Image 1 (spheres, rainbow, N blue to C red):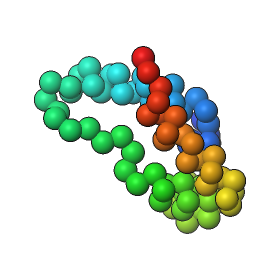
Image 2 (cartoon, rainbow, N blue to C red):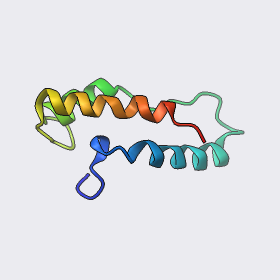
Image 3 (cartoon, helix red, strand yellow):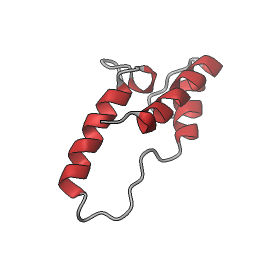
Image 4 (cartoon, rainbow, N blue to C red):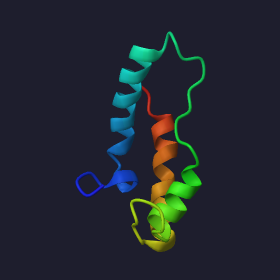
Length: 79
């Protein structure tokens, strides 16, 4: 979080693509169902909006909104 900016950093979508490629490449034959982000609303509202969940960033509605863009961008990036 401190180095890369977490869900507020636009680089997250590219990093997630790399991560997904590696994981799918290694585990794809054995895993039937994949889940990308579990409950992004809680991550964004409580972690980047009001700051009561990790990473504890208090940026209000702006932080919540900026964070909410990242899971969507990660799902849209293609290799």
